[in-house]
Image 1 (tube, helix red, strand yellow):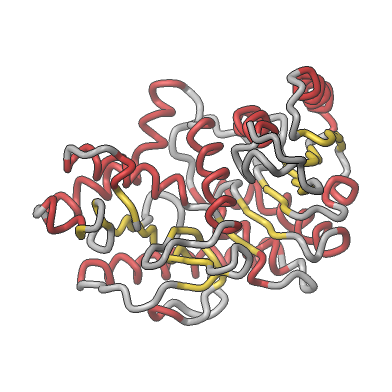
Image 2: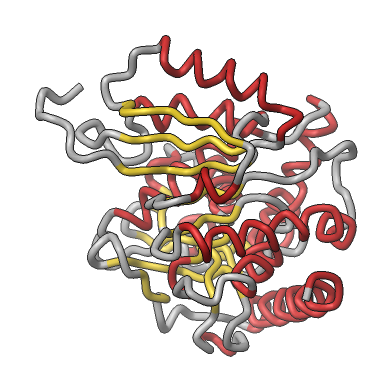
Amino acid sequence: MSTNPPQLPVTVAISGAAGRVGYSLLFRIAYGAMFGTDQSVALRLLEHASKMSRLQAIALELKDCTYPLLDSVTVSDDPHEAFAGADWILLVAGSPRDIPSPARHELLKRNGAIYVEHGRMINAAAPAARIVVIGAPCNANCMIAMAHAADVPREHWIAMNRLDAMRAAAFIAEKAAVPVAQVNRVTIWGNHGEQVYADAHNAFIGDTPAWQVIRDPAWMQEALQAHVRGRSAEIFRLHSASPAATAAQAILGTVRSLSTPTPPGHYFSAAVASDGSYGVPKGLVFGFPLRTDDGHMWSIAQELYLDEFAESQIAANIEQIEQEAVLAERWFG
């Protein structure tokens, strides 16, 4: 732990904070895993009123851990109160899954109303915040919340797909028989879920393109895609619960990548409102390769090579997200 005096705290609000992902995440934020060991944090924890006793118990645990970087913990069942003045808002809230692979339209019906409220409350209480949407289906939920937050810059909204990027990187490392730390620049295009496209062709192993190391196009197009798309269901079948620890790690990594300058020549994956890059319709929340030069504003990395297979996968994801956007507009306005 650094001996430098902590900076002014970063205020982080988390919805659905009493759930499994929240419990896996909060203690790591308080320790310094999100912003580093010189940056103090103030946690605002939001949960449904029926779960407040569990949330209060988690707050007591956080305080008892005596983290030097934990400036304060507040709990609330009021989104306006929890979000007010936050620097970062992590939207984890959603109905619990009771089957391995629930239909996306059903998830949208169950969770969309939550994100209408979240969007309105963020617009009123924290229009300068940067927001990461995690609750499924996160691309559609991000568009729903964004549509109800006219005063929040579109560039502040992110839907998380790093979970898929991590799974792809681990599988690529296993295939290439290298440490996972050597795998970089894995791009996740499109919609987080069973149709997401994990782009290994533009990934690197060390400084060498992954395709030059693996030399197995069929594996990249078939085995890798099936692995990434089916991993959550596989874990659910074994554990009867979604992979909370992996989600927490993905949230930490997403915020770190967004708030830390990207090394030259590198990029990371997250879903943002399209500016028309790669033929994705403007405004559609879509997974892209991103980079940031200042740790605040991101941009879409350009001129990645897309072969016919990649273009077909991107087209399929555009179609799926457009369909979900139509349903979101119909159901939630």
